Amino acid sequence: MQALNHTVFGSLIAVTITEPAIALPLALASHFILDMIPHYGDDPKSPRGSKSYYIRIVVDIIACFIVGGIFLSLNPPHAGLIVACIWVSVAPDILWPLALFIKQKGILWNFFKFHKKIQRESRSGIYLEIVWFAVTVMLFLGQVNKL
Image (tube, rainbow, N blue to C red; front, top):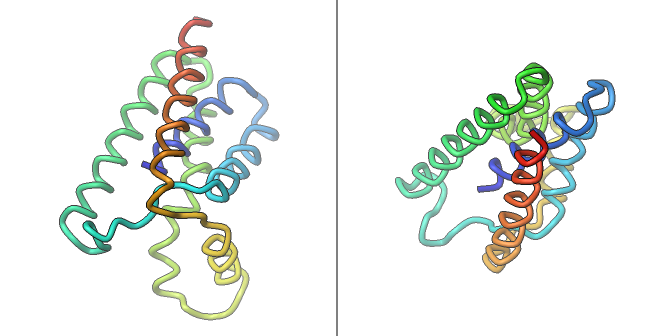
């Protein structure tokens, strides 16, 4: 559910810092900061390419759209920035399939190597994911209460 965390933080940045020149770089930075914190990684019972792996991805994507939709409905004046910050905060993960095709040197390839290097995935990261979920729910509810 890492994409969900990126979506929530991107949305929170957009509604908290409404200046796009600041919010968009922060949304991108939040992606890498979250990736450096240990989080739930590959599940041996759900290896890449398996049906359960794809189900997990689909559930994550649906949750992202639901959370994004909630933020959009609660903050219509910031809709464009919310969408932009969500995309920027999730973009490094969306670009991963591209890494499979380019396997060469260059700026983009160096970006993928950097992104892979900072990942801190582990099975025990599920506990931190639970804490992150609780924190993001509290931050989200804080935004809802401001309305």
